[in-house]
Length: 461
Image (cartoon, rainbow, N blue to C red; front, side, top):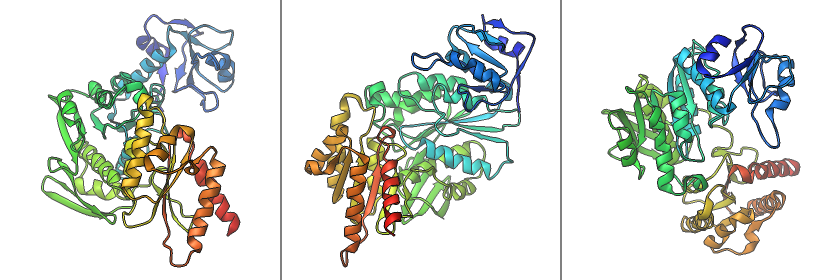
């Protein structure tokens, strides 16, 4: 455990007013009294609906060491008054980073960043003692989550593998300055969060912000297959770069990937493995993780072997084993146009394929156009059936050339029809089991469709 004293906090929080009796030790950061641990510095986030200042007494009762506030409250707990608690929280997190001095690997990208983070976690945890590796938990990858993760560093942490996400410009730049990575991984740039970034070029520029905080002797890990590689190479000028991809220009190159057999090449060496995953996008994720591991000084072939067998996060292109009458693929963790297309292309081309899709969020003015293109792509790829949830996804139906019977207003209605059609298909003599891809943005909550059809099949069996 690492602690910060009041004296240290004052060094990192200039012009702070303090209401405290003597010194104190703080062992972490918390923005939620439900998960607060004794010794945490409670950050009272302001808000119109929920104001953290109203929970300071609860934080004190649970053992908070002090509270970071924008106004003093009548609670018997040390309080540090600052102009902006979010900025102050970042400064405290930066203190943890500077005192603990771990090697930081920061990962960003429109798609694949969580998978790459998990692969790296598997690679490093297999080769280091427990407690030496810190990995971003859940979705703690934004302006609040990254400081919370940095506050979990200890003086024993050797590597911190941190995911950096954003939905507007300069957010990744801010996170990169806080984390000051030794290795910066950019998986790709795709049409995600277009409301905040304005265009695909804007997305690429935002992802490139990760290089801003990269240490002078740091290494940028860049996607050789991405259209914006040149943009990132310019930003990384003067830094070491390792590229990955299928391209012949990639230094960590995927030579072949078929039927889960994967061959990767680096500096004349090749490693062939059998993977636990499907999809070219996951092969690229592996190459990115291996490139980062190489930059950190780990062995190429060992890294490939471990990454090929890592356990994926729930809802990321995982087969639903409870349903035997179809090959249902749960890819509901999130969705944007690039990840939906990647998911569709990962399905076997010679099989009957159905697409079950919820609306994709944060696409701004391009939403209708991008949903329409997904429908067109599904048709071009040979998908035979379409099930769409949410009015915002209506253009998918139009792009596919189907009628409104494919569009559902509730998860229950969609799941009922989907279950019935799977059962009907399995009852027909000689018919092959369909491959069913279920996907959607978090706001579409398509995991509930998976839950409902699993429940229905359990009930019937």
